[in-house]
Image (cartoon, rainbow, N blue to C red; front, side, top):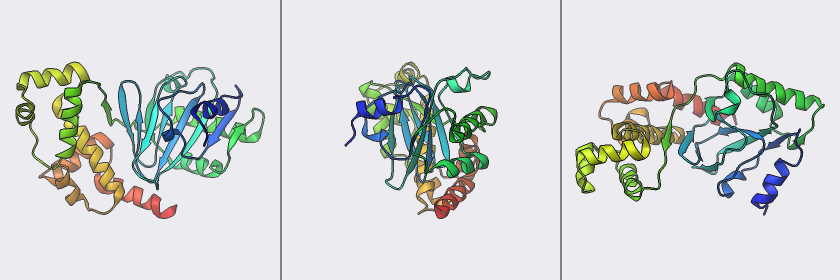
Length: 269
């Protein structure tokens, strides 16, 4: 089995090459970084990307751009997930700062076709080849038409109190969770729990809970075994309209459209 050092050395072996990898290797390794920027495409499930201070959620048919030098760790929720990686050498900065900032974006139809064309290429692609020019054009496409940035992310913490509270919330998303109820459960005042979230996570209790519910909803929608109304109730919404509106606000599409889009992609694979 390949080690982390061998994996990192192989990708960064040549300064000017673009490296292609379709194997699911990154999840095997502890937090690490590359000397090249990374485009990580997710299909068929949801991946999780953890950095030093945030945990990002990457739904199917989205990609994450990871700048060079950013320490990260990849996880995923199903063996059926396909992860496709392209590692790009450094070049001049983009006017918008796109290449210098980690971000998650939807895969456009054009980008999907380009990746489909190149998905069987493996290993180093050398400067001067037509394949290199093709992939470089793909990279420039990202900055010129990135699409709506995906905004679901959760701040991370080493605070044991908050880790316990987060676990408690995740196990009870179907329940009518409130700030006073959770504060009482953990022997805290409402004021102290509010302060704990703001100081440690820089996010409110309600916003954190909303994010957790939407993440769980996406997982259930991708699974495809339940309809939208069943999922709404399972993640704690008594109103389907309220669930749908919140989902669209954060994901930029209706739950039913999200489910249809991803089920369609599964059928085409």
